[in-house]
Amino acid sequence: MSFVRRAATVLAAATALTVGLAIPALAHVTIQPGTAEQGGFTKVAFRVPNERDDASTTKIEVSFPTDHPLAFVSVKPLPGWDVKVTQGKLPKPVKTEYGDLEEAVTKIVWSGGKINPGEFQEFEVSMGQLPKDTDSLVFPTKQTYSGGEVVDWSDAPKTDGTEAEHPAPTLKLVPASGGDEHGTASAPASAAPAAAAPSVAPVAAATSASDGTARLLGGAGLVVGVIGVVIGALGLRRRPAA
Image (cartoon, rainbow, N blue to C red; front, top):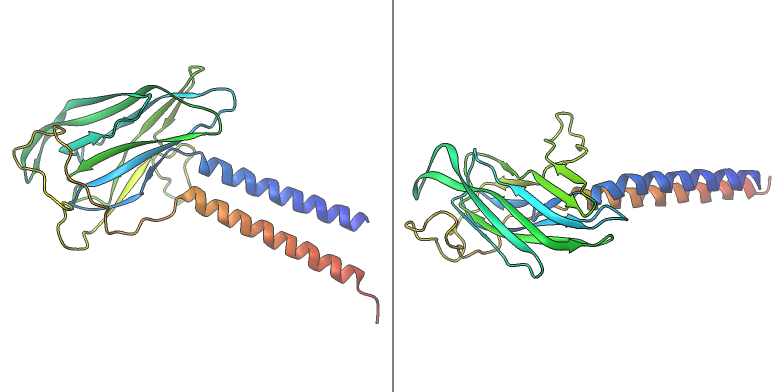
């Protein structure tokens, strides 16, 4: 019986470790899908889970890159939430196929709504033209809770490949697969930045699973493996001597 108790203790510890690793990864603010094609337009959703048991998320502030600005940005209305799109002057003009871009969207803020404990919300944005000279776009995000706490999701990826404590939502960019890089229709060259929403088609690149889901599946595999070891050990323990 002492062996059984020790085995149960080991199994409980392994399960606790697995859950402890998986839950923080699932709680990160992420961008979905996480991949899009260079040179095209795409629609993404900033997925925001509520991490607190005693407070609701009441405000989301997403900063857009100014080193690789996006000429066309539009937001999808979300019932119960107010949205403010801020345009700003770029540090220096950026050449695009629509001409020199001197201003672009620098920030989008959603407020007035509420994400309760145990819930998540997705904030959708259409944007383009995605740059061709970089393999990723980073969108630092601030999450404000009803108690006044602000969580800053702006950590850059670590050089050793491990996950940062508060990673910034990152959109990976892959080379275009061919065809019309603008989707079903191109935005007019004369359109002002952020003035109109371009037609958006799903990107052809396959999207990778989120880090949180991968870690959860890996953790589940660890638990199953531990259970198998415990069962095997019990079987050997009980096998009668020849």
